[in-house]
Length: 410
Ligand SMILES: Cc1cc2nc3c(=O)[nH]c(=O)nc-3n(C[C@H](O)[C@H](O)[C@H](O)COP(=O)(O)OP(=O)(O)OC[C@H]3O[C@@H](n4cnc5c(N)ncnc54)[C@H](O)[C@@H]3O)c2cc1C
Image (tube, rainbow, N blue to C red; front, side, top):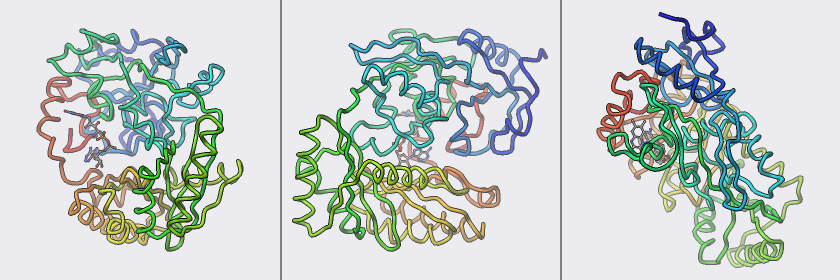
């Protein structure tokens, strides 16, 4: 077998599985050649961007070649008038934002660790931050993609070629597929204008019922924040709402929020730039810190039971615990250090059961090996599993792309 790259080292491991070889193609054509060579020899491949979400999912069943996308980092095209950019998958999100800024544009995605996270990884994980409230997740901002199939065929953007794999809308399926279906090569994003004004307002003291009610009241009060996120404090929550746009509109929205909070009996605190930065930094730390990280979902109307039966008990099993909640979306992120792996694993299992009973879910995004040994990161297979297996069988019939990483052992 011909060597494709340098020898893998423990620093290249995915959840403890060290690849035999590591390649860093400089172009998509080179990447296609690597995948074609892997197809010929039956080698298993996994893709790595910034490496910020590699703990999500199960360890790969086998791993011969690790393909790093670091050198696939070009902005292929930026059409400011059309608010569209075509970028290679290995470009870090923060760098993309810097390139767009002189044109007063941005990609309205704000997952944590944007300086390291690559656009390909963000799309592969369907990642998002608090601006999902207004702009959606990666899936909502991707308008096209080129990708390299498991057999090494480069399917270039748009139209017939991309949709031609057994009738599937492949780019759509690749969002959230964690590298199990194809290598994302370039992504075409819809962009948004940079706002002229940006203001964060804090509602510093809420209980779970107050948080749910306030989140539900935003729409009726014609409040349109670009982001809404709460942080857990001792026994309550602090909710931050971010307003972005033209200065008069932002000022008017803040006034509306003050009026709404007065009516509901909540205090409210406009944050100066530094205070706002500190809040969003704490939010990012709650999402990206800690050896154990979990994403909890629940019906928006079920925030109180989700807090009482799942979030609090899970946090009680962790040291230095933190949580960020997106109450308008029904999502919470919990993180911390498990002191006792057995207790943390039990808390995950019990929280998962409580959420599932209400139609929610819990996905472990990261955990020490001792916890992983006791709980499946995905939990029970979702209802669409058989469909997902059929998609996998079409796109990667030999199960060579990140085998075993995804839900249900896909
Ligand atoms: C083999 C394969 C086949 C696929 N087939 C399809 C398809 O037919 N149609 C399609 O739209 N997408 C398909 N995808 C994409 C993929 O299922 C989703 O994009 C991905 O699960 C995460 O995106 P999301 O939008 O569900 O995330 P979110 O919107 O953040 O999550 C929505 C809900 O799904 C839960 N959830 C997300 N991922 C998982 C998981 N893996 N296990 C359990 N719960 C989870 C979340 O907790 C949440 O409750 C496929 C992916 C693969 C790997």
